[in-house]
Length: 618
Image 1 (cartoon, helix red, strand yellow):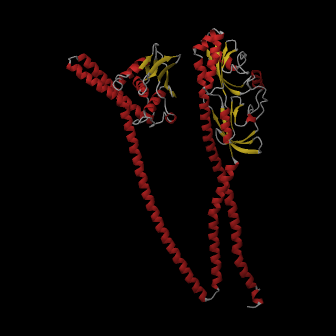
Image 2 (cartoon, helix red, strand yellow; image 1 turned 90 degrees about the horizontal axis):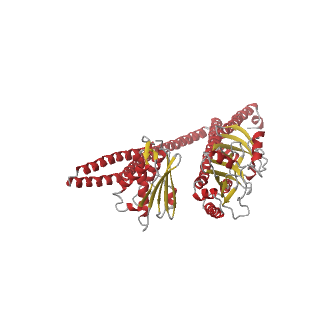
Image 3 (spheres, rainbow, N blue to C red; image 1 turned 90 degrees about the vertical axis):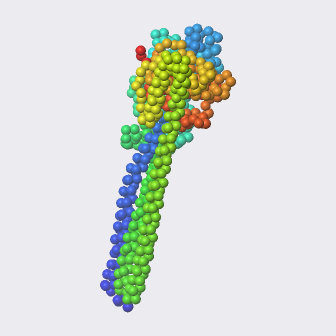
């Protein structure tokens, strides 16, 4: 072939036809890649934002739960101290002896609680005793009549007020309780809770978190410079009220460096925030209310790192799918071009090509056969795995049924033992021809069978949250009934039980059989705890206030181990060798059903179970 033939118009057309498919392929590949990346980015952004919202909701919920737990610890102190004889005596007759004794008592109390300071204010608003009485910054003698927690407690009985300490200059929640009757109050008990440890924990998590009050003022925060800033400018009357009460000292109440972009849902939004020492960044803000307070918790989750990661992974995955497809398309084009080139080739080359195509087809057939065999193996393996899963599920159901059956045996043990004792007594009375006494025992046996039916219903209620009809129950009779049922189990050892229920009108809302079941579980646990103690005693006391009935079961055993206490009210958690761990679960469920509360206090000197029930109107 000479140069004239090489550069003929026919040759140019051939070259153009050869390069044109590759040009079209390159344009289509670029457009397809661009559209794919843009589409994947949009989808990935939406998915990532949904994941961030869900993650922030979970994290914020955990922080709210922990904050609630921190708040609950010091709340009981003012309530208990308001009824303490030393407090009332000192407020009534503030002699130096009374004041010194009360100061020492408050000092000892604050060292063992979560409160930072505890102090007592007389009716004039002047602190007469404080746990920090020995310190230079003692609260003793300071006038707190201007504080809301004093005035509200005197008027309403109790109050909670977050403020900056006028002496300590440290922020905290002031929890106050009135001392004395509403018509003649003699003072107020105040406990201050600070949140330094909580803020350090939030700061270590490196996720901006803060709590605001009803006015939007930041109270607790992981970012110190945000304290006492506001979410939105305050109205002049509100700002004047805060200034006059010195609630936040001389804080300027500046707006937070946050700009809200858009609302994602009812409690989530996207915002831009300027953190100290950093540039403006985007966050998902989750806002949740703090139960039992007018506060709200704000939790900020950074958007950009997760967004970059999610979009990057999605785009890499999409390209990992697209590139092989483009490679396959290029392979098809290349083969077509190769076929076109080979059309003009020699017959030998065409035969060789057919031979190679035949070999390739054979390889593909073999690969297909291998792939089909692998698919069949995978299906067989999947079927076997499904069978194993079904067997495991069946075994798990049988195990659960066994645990429930064991729970039934555990709960009806006391009534069955008592039935046996009454049956033996009835036989003895019949032998002695004392039919009336035998009939009384048989009547008790009938009542105990009803109790067993009630227990089985309670165990069902553990799963479906059932509840028996509520009615006024005389707790003194319920305590006596529980001791009767325990008589056979602890024969000769009930002299260790001391009953203190001298008050009248100890009627609670509930069901007698179910409440006796709670008392049986708790008194039995207490008796078992004091068995190895030579002078072991169990004290069961009952009292009441305006609208609650309080039952206290105290023993001087060795206390509850920390690892057991952490999961004390969880099913199948027990320190007993043959215990099932269902008694306390059922007891707490029964008390909760009637609007009550079951709590525990334990140490190496013993354990106290506290039952708090609604008082019945009679």
